[in-house]
Length: 347
Ligand SMILES: Nc1ncnc2c1ncn2[C@@H]1O[C@H](COP(=O)(O)OP(=O)(O)O)[C@@H](O)[C@H]1O
Ligand SMILES: [Mg+2]
Image 1 (cartoon, rainbow, N blue to C red):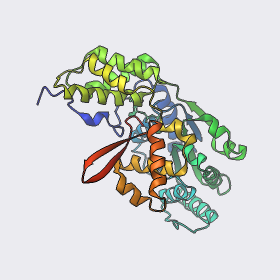
Image 2: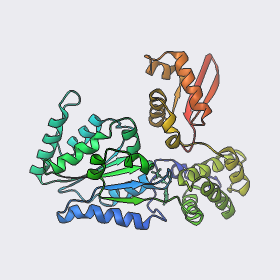
Image 3: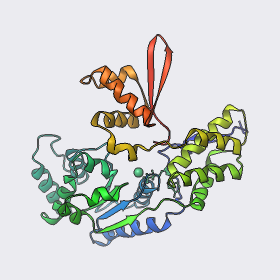
Image 4: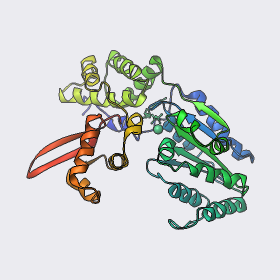
């Protein structure tokens, strides 16, 4: 099996977290330094991390949290992805759980959850850091108040709770009620789009893990393509995967420039869910959340899961998502007509 082109496909999947993040050394250091305050009995600052998609924001936070795992004792750090935990209740429930308080899931008064959580944290002498990734989503869907809730655990009830918000769009947070904004942002850290050499290094390291053999120029070409598409490392990595699959299909044992070119040609100008989000309705967002969780879904199953919406309307939504390049719909011929819906790679 030694001449297989792809020796480890896992390292090209979105959930893989490498043990080095070239180009983000300074950001890692800054964020880790802030978290370490908690070890010395000081409350970490509230951070706002912002930058376009694919600039390593999530990866850096997960990396830093992973490095600080030995932090048990009095420090609790939770990473919450607001795609999955997209409501005020959901987030508050998670914060409550972190301090060991099982709050009523629904129906409980928000104020009670806030005060009980804060009291318990205080009594136990905990330092809590809540990382809210994809915070844009929470704000866009009108749940931004949870930021104020968390800040009040600190300001009103005296618990040591800090927030790290991660957003793609800085303006969105600036558009928040100033009262919320000032209580949750002490410091902001910008993640700039990667430069071409940075992308090349990131992709080279990934290619070494993924492929048995590759041409340096193939990686250079993919890096250039990612650079031209907003310096997005996610796109670069998904291009590595496509290029690898193209090579495999051709029976190659080496990733060539041709494979890279072909992969890049297939993936021009694919809009990102993150950017398209503004124009998406609730139903479309639900479909995307489902797909993020499941990878793919058959049309029949989707209709079943969203029974309250009629099929025709759903089909219209799907058509819109397909048109904007966010999903693909594959017709499978067989018994009846099944369609398999997938998020486009890189989304
Ligand atoms: N500096 C880096 N080194 C290695 N891989 C990176 C780096 N930055 C981003 N990545 C990879 O690129 C992809 C997108 O990064 P991610 O952190 O999810 O971006 P963001 O959260 O800013 O949208 C992930 O697969 C991640 O592992
Ligand atoms: Mg992210």
